[in-house]
Image 1 (tube, rainbow, N blue to C red):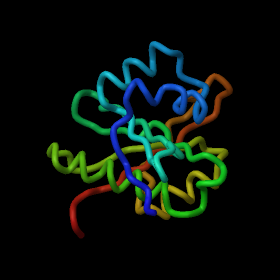
Image 2 (image 1 turned 120 degrees about the vertical axis):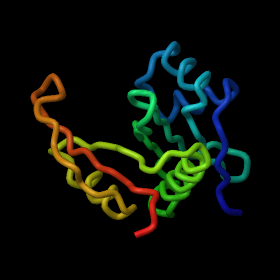
Image 3 (image 1 turned 180 degrees about the vertical axis):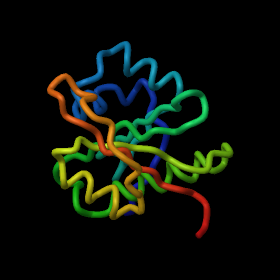
Image 4 (image 1 turned 135 degrees about the vertical axis):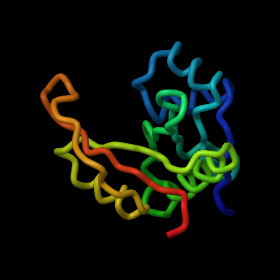
Length: 142
């Protein structure tokens, strides 16, 4: 059975915490309230999540995508991103930004594999002095 994607709800909080321990409860509540979290389900079980935000009220930014271990390598991240892109297009957006730390070649390759292009580096954004590679996925046909 193929994965389905839907907006997360408060009923998904245990699964969200299982997949990503970082956000505090208040952060999850804000993300859910703003409908900025999508979940991927297989056979009724949450196997992945994606959360994003809208920067400066005009720029969608993919913040995080996480799949449980046994759901990786099967195209589910593309399913989540494609679903988000469709939702954003319906709202009139023309691109999606994302980023990856400069010392993380695998996430950078993942972005490129999905069609994102590198748009520069923000230096010293993390406390450790690590930079971020900024990526952009255009929704316009070329």
